[in-house]
Image (tube, rainbow, N blue to C red; front, side):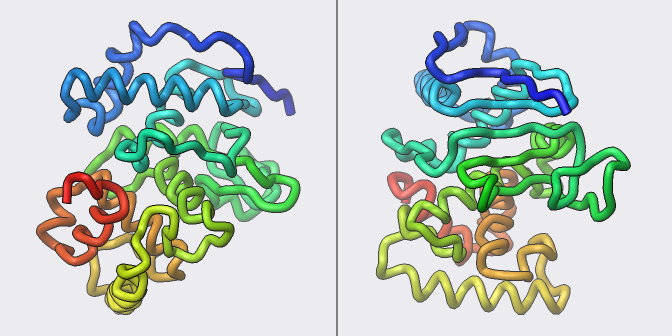
Length: 242
């Protein structure tokens, strides 16, 4: 399978002058920012693209691919100007959903994965379906954004363990209340009594990522329907606005 590098390390970052048009078309989070915040957001994206390689397999690389990935990385940590994804080196884009062997388009069975953070030989790598990447920014109403979901896993992993407890962001005094909130809502999910995606009921790990997707895609709806979860995620992702 041919692999293309979209952005390589140690190459000059591209001009951001035309990024606004792409971001305003696709990224609702960017639309809501003030002009100075938009500039800072683009600078953060540029720094991310300078640090992380983006590769594609059997799909033509585009600048929009890179911008959507960079936006997905910055959205959850926008309030943390010094944040770096030290546990990520490469993002690999596949054309569609895939299985655990990264097989797609009829190459294998079980092609149900839209994105994943790698382990073992895939450590420090994120694999994303291009189809899922674009869907996450095309449809805000379904509270689904695969790329943000995977970057939240990396945030969770910053303390060395993916467990649904973002120790890098959440003050220690809130850990037990957060665990309790997770399990209460997971029970509701598994009884079909919650509008959080069913996948969030499978584990603490997936609950945190699914809830974060909801938080960034439909913040007003989450604040109304899940005020306690919204408040706790605000303490994680937007502490200065608390």
